[in-house]
Image: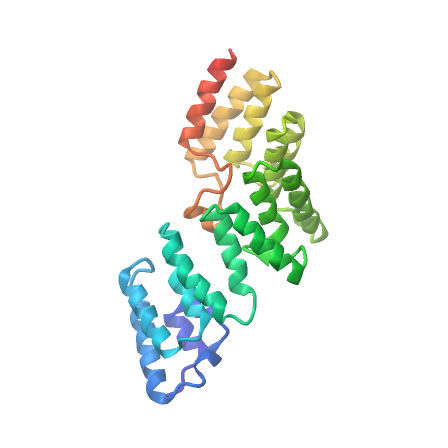
Length: 278
């Protein structure tokens, strides 16, 4: 029975991210038939269901050394905040992987999902030695994620160094991501350089006009510069944009808060902070 990659991806779309159909080339006809049946059935269940995990277990029984399926077991668990369980499967994928693809993914997961910044730094430092400063994971160079780790550890000078590296990389490729400019603004905000913060947040807003998170921290910066009326007006605008969904739209921000991402609590805090400044 001949199984093409096109047919597999029709029923099992995430196979697009695997090596290719060569993963099943060593299977006999019976195994290939069972494999396709499992893939077809799995396409009809929820990504977050126990059934999906059981189908992956069956696929792993057929291809126990294929790291892709181990990573696929981990991915929905991370999105359900079952980090410890997911990491067990991701560690297995890395053990079986002949590249550093899944190690990159683990470094990202430790930064954004687990919020284990020291371990994430260790992972990215290892990867940097192999791939250089500008290896890419989740549409950002390593330096961006390293900068976020340092930011979350309150090592602001180191964070700035790496976020600026990330921005320099974008400039060479004629596109600077608005989130990288946002975080440079955040670093300046945390260092008390409020005008520098505003300058960088404005650059972020030039690319993402209704970015409520950038407006929020720009409003606080204005208030700290004693431009209270201007800051209050912008804060109201930020809150309106937030309610209309104009916040982070990174792929994984659906599942996890990114550092300094705004929420209802922060808007409540800001309004109380303004009262204290009166």
